[in-house]
Length: 174
Image: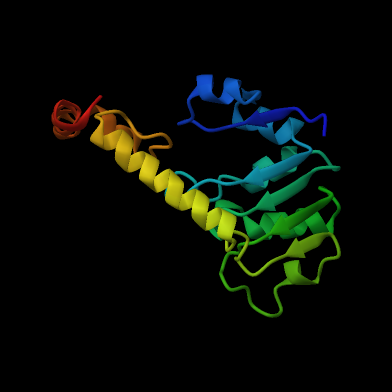
């Protein structure tokens, strides 16, 4: 597709991103440069409305936002307003805030929005991939190495975690 990929993730391994041809950027650059912005983060206190009204205001008028994360990661009221005013081109939403959305939610009436019923990952391929990733994480842990995609990065510096990883490496490592 001759696309350039940029991403913002404070926990991502820059070397892995580079391997895949992804340029890591700050949030402001992500907002300003993205033609298609896909939100795919876990939902927690740090990601609540990570796509805020201010973020949306920086997006290109030709940009599309896709949210397959969790509804509260995007300020849905600000997104609705931006879509109504053609401040951005459109959105694809698999999740809402609240979920399920009210039948009269204005975002459901917009022609520049495509919605799905929080089911995009309900495919055989997705479940197989999740299972394979889970198994790989178990094996990595048993070998005393950090599993790929570790969400709770703070655990790495924890003495109990480090002791367990050392013990696992001694018992199961290669």
